Length: 123
Image 1: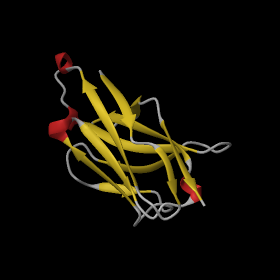
Image 2: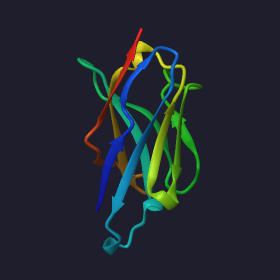
Image 3: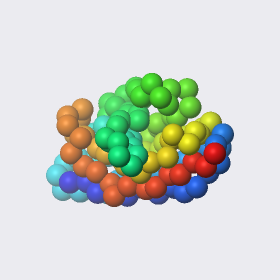
């Protein structure tokens, strides 16, 4: 019902900033629009489990974040552009990971996933 494509990953120095984008292609024949999907950003570092970095709800601008990124990362969405963003500031080497965009239907399970984009923070 929805395809997700991330962009914006790359190499950044510690203390720097990066913005990831996730463009959603929604099949409107199912009667859904981008605004009916909750969106999230996950990351997975080598040898570690995938973790939720931040999320934004489908029906409000409410966001939540992992403790490790609070105050540094911001998730926001532009429903007119079918895009969700992850603004990352004051980055640390431990932020190095593959970052994935995910979507759920109206707060349900994370059903849809992007292919991921590599983020590397050098010290």
